[in-house]
Length: 207
Length: 84
Image (cartoon, rainbow over all chains, first blue to last red; front, side, top):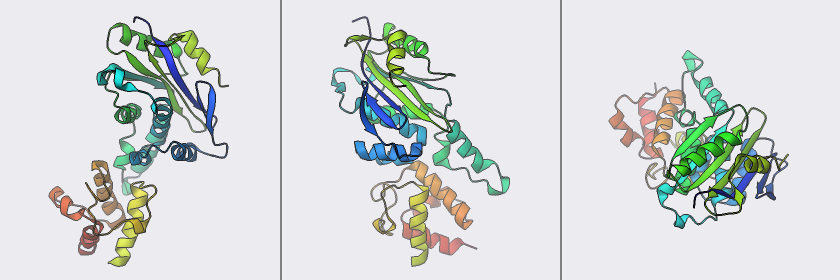
């Protein structure tokens, strides 16, 4: 086994959820990431109360991972054999701003601990890792645009240096007006090669 | 005291994002941490901020926290005793 293949992918975009290119959920009426995430949570029913304490981008990443991994049998891997490599362009900017508002005014200085703990995108990786017991390597890259080359290269390097045999990779982003998650699972089994062209092709299938 | 407990229930549900929970679901005598509501360490910090922000009360000795935040009833009692 010396090559990686894409086993499954999930794309959340424009209030719709696609798995392997097939539409599996939509909520056209949701007017925010908050209402969309709540409706998707109700649909998936993961019974995970901590979900409601997460910031919005962590909720988005958590739900994308839930869709991607919920029926996956990880028993063939050691716990440290699955790594996660994610990216986005806005880091946790909206949560950072929310935190900033609580410390702007010296006379009303009440930073919220539960907001502050989410002011790093790595926390989203932590939430996904706790939920799915992913104990391999992890990395979060901030880049201007979706960059399949960066993600595939990093994952392929981890694989070739025997750090892990299976990976969750992708993009989870939230800006003022939009949100999007594209996650995939890659391992030594499958028929779609794990390379930049294929990842770009899959990412661009949903316009 | 009853009025304060009811107010605290609403504030806690909102502050701690206890989705799906209504004020009537919370037993004022039930432990807030561990069993009962199952709150965690970040929730504990939020409760400290809540006391300071809404009631102007600072917990001076961290050891008191365990007693104060045992239940909603103990929290309400502490507020009554310490609010200026």
